[in-house]
Image 1 (spheres, helix red, strand yellow):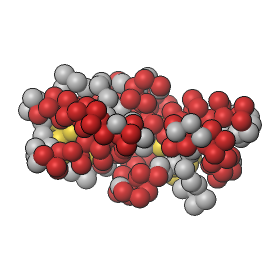
Image 2: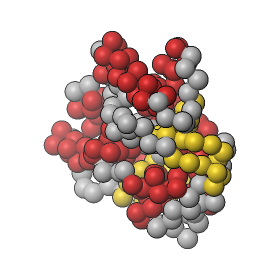
Image 3: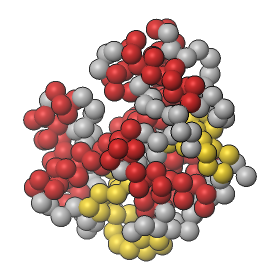
Length: 236
């Protein structure tokens, strides 16, 4: 039985804890033993993106300590997975945790690329369109894995939108510093989804999900946003 440590990102912990619970159910259904370190904290991405690399390095050290016993870490977030895998090594130059950390995977890539699991026995009623989060797609190259998983969900039909790979406009601090541009980008994504037959938008990043959901609720366009883990857990 594969033993994995679950990393629960800040946005998931504070705003969407159901995504963490769904992730545990999916991993256990795939035959994994799931360990959730209680001492875990932020991976340092907000500080890193803001240019505060010393503070990000300090946070990375705390994160590494919390997962010291882990060989494999799974996270339901492409952005946090990219931070640990791609950018923690950069922080070593400014006092980050030295040496290789645990193998860290986004949920879909772990299931498909590491475990070879594409069917987790999920069901979902209706058409769904997919939003590719920037970090998962561009930093980690995750594109096929979530689609393979969705293809095996009973009752679900994946309908691709034209703007599936464009940024939703969140971008962490970008949405705070450039709200007008961020809102316009969210509208491009929303309008692309609305041109499909789907009224449910799925994604692998809670940050994207919250940003788009907030805009949709403001304009009342009727779109529903769900995390991949919630679909795979059969909670639809």
